[in-house]
Image (cartoon, rainbow, N blue to C red; front, side):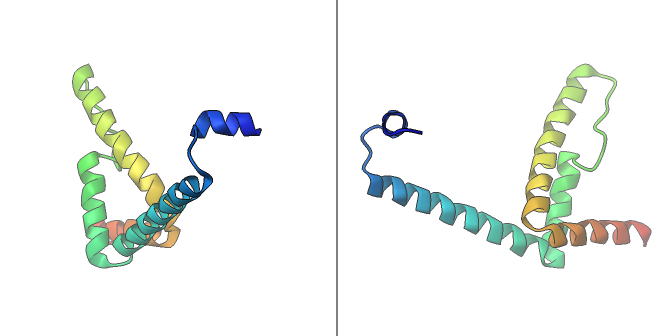
Length: 108
């Protein structure tokens, strides 16, 4: 990107303000990752996460013969899948522990 293109995107925003915004975005991302790891690294947090997955239908097919109902269920499921993908990317071991906890609870 050349200087004119950068200016078109950022306007006349001073470089130090842009750096602060980037730093704030980085800090927010790091906080989000820490929150996900906190959630998935305790049995209590994993129970909450599994409850969210169940309520969104992320771990089911979401089928209904009624088109409007199916669209609603698929919308809920889509949100759950998006959240689950973030968790899996952020903390693969914690995500696996959550699924293991689900399987163990199903077996007993």
